[in-house]
Length: 137
Image 1 (cartoon, helix red, strand yellow):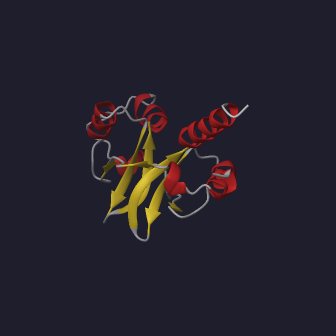
Image 2 (tube, rainbow, N blue to C red):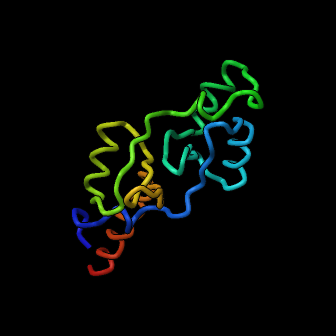
Image 3 (tube, one colour):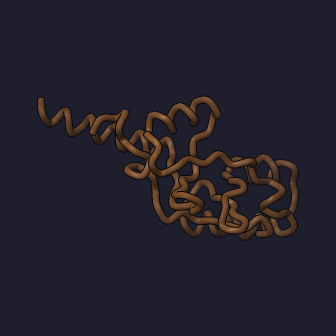
């Protein structure tokens, strides 16, 4: 598999966790902890409208000493959210990540959220490919 022909759907993580814009930050953090994830996608009407990372919670809730019970996801999410089609190339998503300075991008199939692709997903796949090539030597 050549890196330039590798598709997002071959590398992405499926079964992403989501939350609604009205969820409290306390609920968001509980979900992130329960599933051991560093970020969560905020959806409204089944469409991604934002993302919340651990860093967002620290900067926008913890540091200013706000109450996570009273702050809603919509108030701290990063938006608008950048998405990519599952049939896009990994080279294309890497370019977008570099240009937009993001590490995680929700993946869409038509109008449906089907996964997320992260820089660690990409690195893992590339390192695995290099390892396989190394076995040939």
